[in-house]
Length: 158
Image 1: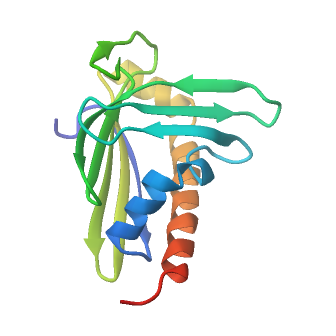
Image 2 (image 1 turned 90 degrees about the vertical axis):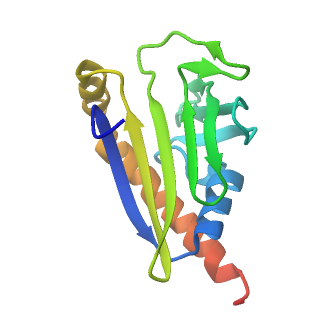
């Protein structure tokens, strides 16, 4: 897809790709939404066509549900999802549909985590940026870093 209409954030995390993957897939309720919002529900069915559903909640209790589907998975290396479809490849209308690409690349003693939002056109990309993409997704990447590094420190050395 090239650079196209993409927004991305990246962090170097002091943990192996396997630990960052575990933090991403098994601890998403701890990091997925920028604080003070929370993520009370995350449902991943990690295979192409499986669901990728998240519920985010404001401090006042307002809930936003996002339903999506897994497009590609390479455990501990890459997860591609979209909200343009739901489980079973059912198309879904929406103003903010994009393809999300999360990668977990070994780098030195850690992992280069990159989260990328690939949009259909410039207007959608600009709208997402205007909603605070860099700040919000940056906060979330920092929160994932905290969780992964905590898990790495809890794990016994090999």
